[in-house]
Each structure stands twice: as C-alpha cells, then as structure tokens.
Image (cartoon, rainbow, N blue to C red; front, side, top):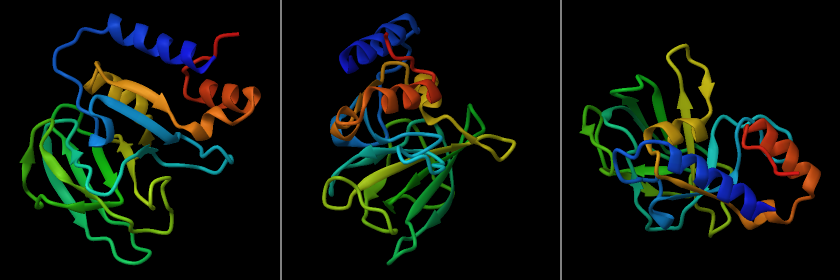
Length: 187
C-alpha cells in the first residue's frame, strides 16, 4: 500500500514541469526526503511545526530556495540550533533546525548551497544517533505552512519516502496521517 502512495506522489511530480534538479534539504539521500515525522502533527497527535527528515552526522544541510540568511541560533544542550533563510521567491521563512551553521547572517544562498550540518541539539532525538533535520516553513502571515507542499513547488523533482516507523503503524493511523497531509491513501 505504501508503495502505491509513493508511486502516486511520483506520478504527480512527473506532471509538474521540471525546471531544476531536485535538491533535498538533507544530503542523506540527495533528491529524496525521507519523512520521519509529519506536519501538522506528530504521529502521536501533538502539534508539529514542520517535518522531520532523516539525516546522519556529517550529512550536508542544503538550501532549497534562493534567499538571504536572516537568523542563526547556535545549538547547545536543550537549545535547538537553527538557521533561518528568507526565500527570495516565496518570501517565506525557511527554518532548518538541529543544524550547526556553516553560513553567516546576510549570506545570500542559491539552491544547493551549504547551510550547515546536522547537530544533536535540542531535546528530541532522531532515528540515527540523535540526528535529524526539522524543516519548517513560515508564511508571510507568520503561520506555519505545509513543508511538503512547499518542497513540491520549489523542488518539483523531489521524491518522498516514509520511514520504517510509518510502515509499522496501523492502516487507519496511516490513513489519518496521509489524509491530513492531503496525500491520499489508495483504498
């Protein structure tokens, strides 16, 4: 069933005009986003401001859209390291959390430029030694926006995968999650 969902997403992406090669925010598997926690809620029902995606120590965190770096907060202990970029085209704030910055405030980055590397800052841990990328989009009204929709617009060639965690959940829990993400679950 999950393969049909992924194939459905791939079919949708093939219909979208491909202008640029896919750049995923994490170099875990370039051109692919492996979602480990979704938006707007975690699998347990609590609110989640972005999506979490797989990455490992040493993976590169890359800019998805052209734009200026407007904020960097170094991570330490329970304080989450983050880099905030203002999208030049979307005018949205693109937030990369659990990130050790290798850029500076004021830098103007293009898609594929290095933002930084994953760190293990914050209270949450990822599936691989505590590392994951929290990818969040904030629209011009200041509201969280769907990161999957954003990526489908700004990186139309990107492929989405779902972690093993989702594959072990019941059909009804997955259906609820996919419905919330407007991905649809084939009957």
